[in-house]
Image 1 (cartoon, rainbow, N blue to C red):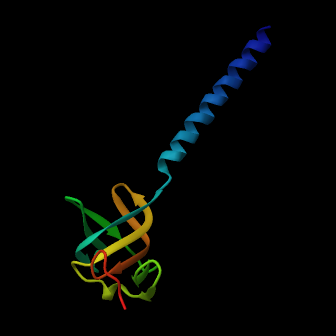
Image 2: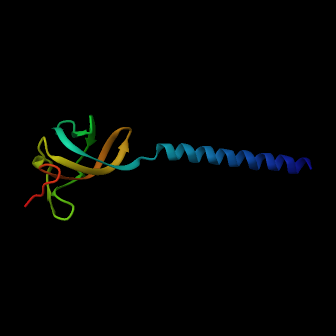
Length: 117
């Protein structure tokens, strides 16, 4: 009986430890997401794009691996960050680092609701 109770205690403690470690690992995992809005500023020195989303400004971080396209979902062409201008509409996908989106891909157009030809 004594051996069985000790074994159950160790088994239960191992189970709780596994749950705790799993929860910690899940908290540190970057969360995938998207961010879109009107471009307020593009700062190539800090590799950030500030967009207006509703009444708040949000940050998008990009790097050399970020893919930029211009146009709509159905018709877009690859371009560089140099083509992006303030006042344009941008839609980026990536992972959130806190409240900043680290972009893997961004698509933009002159303004929301218009198409490029």
